[in-house]
Amino acid sequence: MNKQLLVGLAVFLGIVFLVLSFVYFTKPAQMLPSYLPGYQAGLVKTHYKHGIAALIVALGAFSFAWFQSGKKSVKK
Image 1 (cartoon, rainbow, N blue to C red):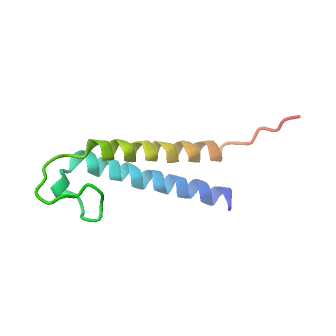
Image 2: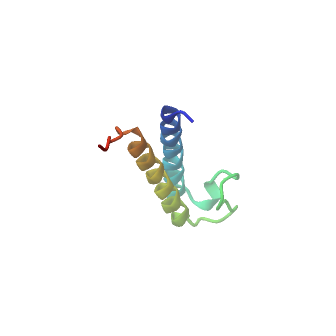
Image 3: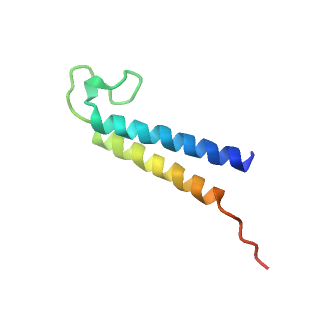
């Protein structure tokens, strides 16, 4: 797989999970889209654990992209 494509995909997924963590932190369970885990009609609880997990995945994807985009060191 092309290295630039892999870095681009990791950045895209990082952005998606960053937005998803923002949604989990700001919306109660009844306001979440029905296709997201944690949606429950009538529940006003906010899913902070889901937000933290999405944030960790986003940071992992960004760090993967950062390390993959760096120069390779040549050992002699």
